Length: 152
Image (cartoon, rainbow, N blue to C red):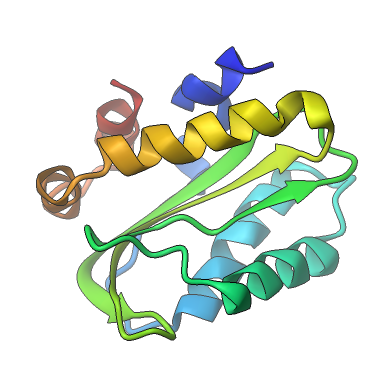
C-alpha cells in the first residue's frame, strides 16, 4: 500500500503526461488531468472527483514556491494511487498569484490504511520537484523521457 505511492511508474503513465504550451487556467488544467485519470478508471465518477479536487483547491493553494502544484484528493472506490502530470514551459498563475510550472495531480484511496502513503507522496513530490528539476522538465519535449525523469 504505502510503497506503491513511491513507485511513480505504478501510478503514472505516458498517457497521463501532458506538455502544455497553450494558455490554460489552473481549473481547466486540473479538469484535463482528472479526465485523463478517470478515462482509465470507469468506476470513478469524474464529476464528483473533479468537484472534490476543485473544492480542496479553493480552501488552500497546493502550489509551492518552486512552481509545483499538487492538487489531490482522497477518493472512495479507489484501491490504488493514481496520478497525472502536466509540465508548463510557460507558467500560468493560480488563484493566489503563484506561478504554476508543473502540476502533479494525484488521487489516493480514501481508506485510513492509505493516509500515511498520501502524506508520504506529498512530501516526496515537494522534495523531488525543486526549481532546478522543474526547469529540467520544462525543457523536455518527450513524454517517455519525462516519465523516466520523474521515476528516478
